[in-house]
Length: 146
Length: 481
Image (cartoon, rainbow over all chains, first blue to last red; front, side):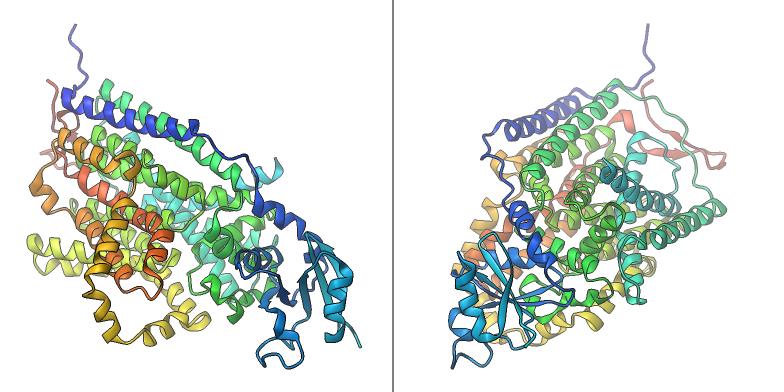
């Protein structure tokens, strides 16, 4: 019995088979390639900063002081604490005689990378900030209502 | 589970409105599976894009994003999609294609594409599970902006504060608004940006395959879609939630519409051109590089069209610009009123002497070409060599390639990329190393469209021929007698 279905040239069928083989091979190699253990670093950090975000008002402006020049932690803090704006500070910015553009006078909060609340308080107290929350090795200080 | 259902609800609206608009601009005369799949992919792209424009208009009008925005969004989408559907039904009907016999090979091709799509979705899902917030640019730029737009409420303009310049506040808002809009439906879940990213990543191969199928038959269409699905970087950068994959998806759908417009006349041509313009405009609303892609597509269309049609091709620019008007207006308002950063950048670019110096620096050319070559899409699996071989096997015609709008548009965009890297003020190797592999993806599907659409049509899928009676019924010219 003769089929009324159209046929395709063998070369076209071969091309289709090769294209499918390529797609399956690449997908297979991606699926089977060893992956590092699953760890959602951004998500973990994001969740850890929720208590800090809860302590912030909608118009918070934060000065961030971290013991690193790497920008990644700064960007992650900004991601986690939006819509607060996070401005990075350097250690000397808030010292007496620091640069005029340094320690922001209009900051509502400071966020200090410190292993202890006391250490952060010692830094913030002369500037008029007091600790209000702590998480993930960061201490949040709010401008005191003096 | 509730969040997932809410996400689905948040996607159905734009897709339905996009379907109404797509069917108005590209009426379903050709009812083949590939043509309808292509329409669905285009509908998703158009729907997501327009939903972001609606959200932007709402913000500019003094509104804010939140759970209450869902009602505004739903009403606007119903009005938009319903209006387009109504106008489409009142307008002239597209000629219906008579049902044609489908070969076993075509069925097999469709099955293979579906399997490859499933495997690619699996790869996307595992990559998303490992990094639900996406990679660097996703959380540092796009999703961070979405958080500002949602969390800041009426003070959403804080997203563009000068302190955030490092996060490229001058990048347009299609993705952040699409994500923030979905959060209005489902709450702030990392699933939302992942779903948006997936929509773009998987609309692209479907739109590509459908556009090639229209020009060169279903087997060539399936082969093109399979080659894009075999490009690991496309899926993985899609899962990284980078904007280059959405730009690529919109670019290939737009150039596919341009390609189709070249083969029809009258109102159908105008509508296809308008659809192309809308998609190109949405590409610019996604990322500023999308404007370069749009310019390349228009230049390619005019340059090649003028050879065949003379000055008539210039008239085609009217519907293209009309289609791009809404996203273009949003882009202008964004850059003039909200973030005038781009105007500053254009006027304060380094001295032209230093740019000229960079352009004639042979060492920079060497670095750019060698790093772009190694970062070319699919290079780790030699996908471009496979693509070329497959196109040859499918009967690619050199003369058709020389007249190919998609191929010229893709090559022009690659030239833009080369120039951008040559004059970059950033450290050249760092800039290339951190961006080349994803930036090159923007042109990749369009290059595949140009290559495979220039293939000879298989006898099983020969061109449609208008019936002599002129009753608007098209019949298959081919075939397998």
